[in-house]
Image (cartoon, rainbow, N blue to C red):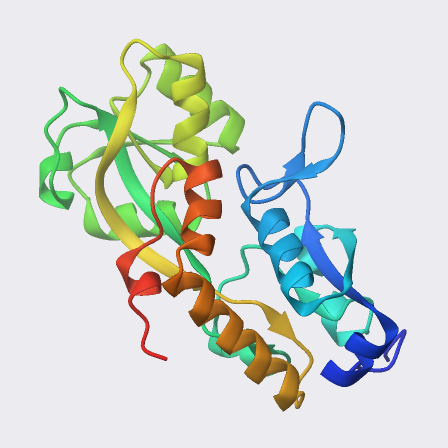
Length: 246
């Protein structure tokens, strides 16, 4: 059941506002800054989108679990919130072409030599329990000394304190380790998997999807989306995202 009817592109333009759902509390993508204001690469992406569309942005702050339901119920027109494009989600919402990506990585200090799963043999490798990273290293790095932690915060502590020599996680978590341990920072050793992130919208809204797809490709080409990503994440967008064909 929808809270509000699905708004078409012409209606959004006519009414002069666009409601964009953003899950707060995702490091670098969307979070509350020191002034308790929304900040992050997804927030800036939403702001640029509304600006180029010529309408006022209404940020709808949600939880991770509400990213798809916010579209299904009509609470928001779009979701810009590090949402991976998956076949399951695509059954209930439509996605744009990717505007960014999220990588799962193995990271360690510079002096730890790691290039592949095989190099993890015997190393104390930290992961957050019951995550895709946990499942991945359990399968592909059976000779590693895998240390499982109950949440990301304790994984960060393990990395800072030296309980582990390497971690399998995502870059925002690695960045948290480096904030607390600046003398011997962790760096990406190799990428385990890369998930394409799309803007989600209601099904069967072709004009809106066409506008958004074109907007993403144009702003990848002119570098604006890359600049937003680099501002918060400290590195450029993946070539898989940047080099999409229009």
